[in-house]
Amino acid sequence: MSHAPTVFDYVCSNADKFAMLLAFECLACFLSILLFFWSEPGTAAHVVSVLNVLGAGTLGAGTAALLVKCHRT
Image 1 (spheres, rainbow, N blue to C red):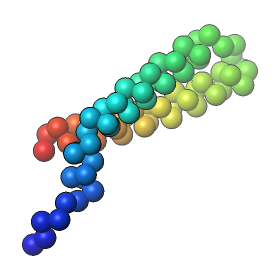
Image 2: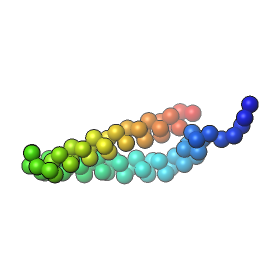
Image 3: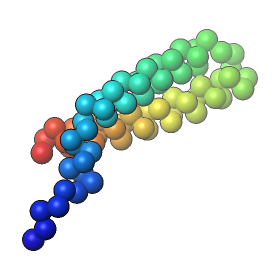
């Protein structure tokens, strides 16, 4: 049986960096939500803000799930 570190071991050893990434993703999502409510419906800024919220939310959820898995193991 091999005792070589896996990719998951490498990710968990850098959990502090992933926590900082999650903080930036949350900030980006928050700013995009503000832009969503500030912009006029039907404009390009409104559409971009919706896409930003979806993208930052998806990346944030994935990063949070990864950090939870690292924390539980």
